[in-house]
Image 1 (cartoon, helix red, strand yellow):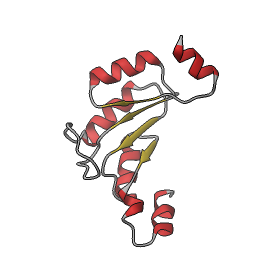
Image 2 (tube, rainbow, N blue to C red):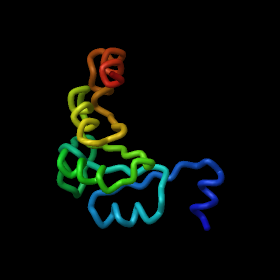
Image 3 (cartoon, rainbow, N blue to C red):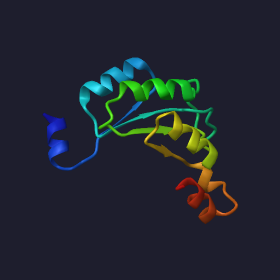
Image 4 (cartoon, rainbow, N blue to C red):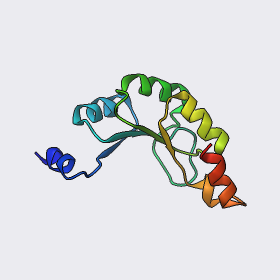
Length: 114
């Protein structure tokens, strides 16, 4: 089917989740990665979801097989918040404001990469 065509073409398929039901559906699709958000209250866009928090992030990581990368998003506003998300189980973080609102973009990126 279509998913096989994507995988055979080296096209990544990421699925964004906001609930356990969505996670179950995503896992059945065997995506390239799964994302969860928002982790913290986000101001970059209006969403109809409450912040998931670090506890839900940890529970999702336990349910997602280790071979599927786990990406989180949602007001990860600085390196400290990124480190908390990674300690809670995220493989990587998607960010906006931590860079776009930084006084020194290079330092912000360097801090996030540590």
